[in-house]
Image (cartoon, rainbow, N blue to C red; front, side):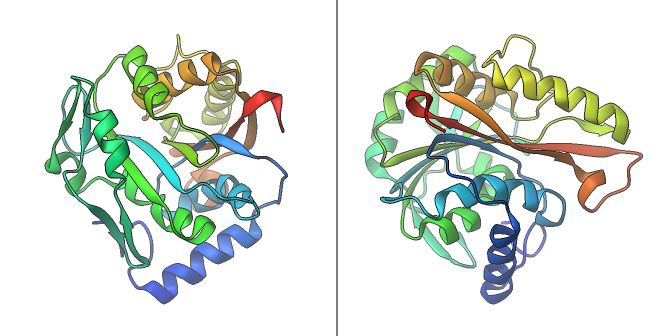
Length: 259
């Protein structure tokens, strides 16, 4: 839906841009169970997102399932929406929706099919090309998250947690439209909350993905994941005016204290 706007609309240009972003990201030896990455246009947040997806390139074996959660920007609703689709498409090809995980998600009364919630939503779509290049073949459980209790999101994540074959990705930007210096302070505070797995003070002003993020932090704490900051910048650092910026953070959560 946002090909040609948030990222290049043809396969060759998209492949080249994603590969360049991944190549320019610093290599780190982490095996993430859960990633937090931003969802703006690639010119703004692409380098920050790439710092998360670079981790996946050298994993062996690589995850074959991705549980992808992002906030709803275009439709207001309560609960968590599935796309009622069998695949999600980018210029790089189609990613099959994981029907087994869909069946698990549908056991929760706050999860429902809503094609409208997904039709123009960028918060999930912009991650797919990175995942396609970093993982190759995989299936996805795409969850567009409206207003929902963090405990409900955490329970849903527990149900689809799986083993090393399953990667969880939370899509969220950080602060919006603050001056550069103020955004640096606010986003730094938010990053420290994320590192503590503390969702108590998170709200939409700190992170537009506060609903999926809050639930993910509860689940991460419950599962004993160890968080690491990969990158923390804003649009004033990448391609934007410093008078009004959007904050971006990338974080990896690893199992068993691993780094």
